[in-house]
Length: 375
Ligand SMILES: Cc1ncc(COP(=O)(O)O)c(C=O)c1O
Image (cartoon, rainbow, N blue to C red; front, side):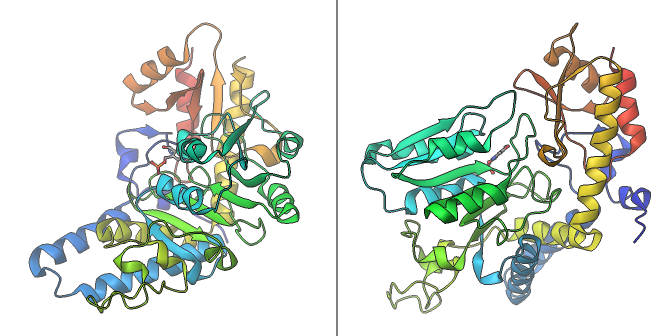
């Protein structure tokens, strides 16, 4: 299928004012996503909750769409307020014994660090695999694991370098050693294909506001069917039980699906937005989106190297993502970012590098504009 990226671009009003290359931070919304949320707000304003059956239909549709995106079953999906909440469910849900450990990396965003460090009160050690030249080596993960390792917790794509971890290999390692595999997918989901079954993931979490192009505070959560009963549900609330709407029947029997982890009412506005944006992504096709994002970053990397900038991100094809980080020799990254911002080119300054993160609706012309502005 030939995709007309220029037509799709029309759906993103942000392009009128900005060269927006910062999807690894917070993304702009499409018209379609805006309209979906506006329709909900309009309904709630005019009718209160009289039409709430429609809200639940949208939430059901969103759950199915998230499941499709991940190659999961809809019974394995729950909605969270952010990535951190999903990771906390896994971290607090394992029946730790003093002396157990969890393996993560020193390049992780803190959303995937504090939930684990906070387990030290139970005598749980958090082990940090050290990043080497902005890569995390499988052999280093393997050698950090010992007989007391209960979980490996890692991002699909590292937030600063853009390094893409090999989830399939790590997942196989976890399965062979009977270790929980927890994945922060916020820096890949929506731009890079994710297959929770192929990667043997136990728990995955990703908020909507980066590559999914959704609003903040409406996050996807996956818990594999066979993992649901292995986690203690430390978040059990009124919506997590089978008789949720039989309010005074205080029966604690939990739902036989991942919805047991949803404590109470939904962020319905957010889920209207999340549903609309995932529908759009699935229509375009994640394979097509991934190809397009990698084409744009290819162009960027080639031209940066030609201009003698130092590309910090890995150039190994299967370690690449939507994030490219680079440095100049004459100006600090902060200086370059602020110079670009004055010209309405939006990138980020992260971990000594300039982080550029284009999505599918960006154009080659926009990449060239960024390059032309670099001294
Ligand atoms: C890898 C990673 N995880 C998590 C987050 C955010 O977590 P949350 O959705 O809990 O705010 C970010 C960025 O903000 C991130 O880059």
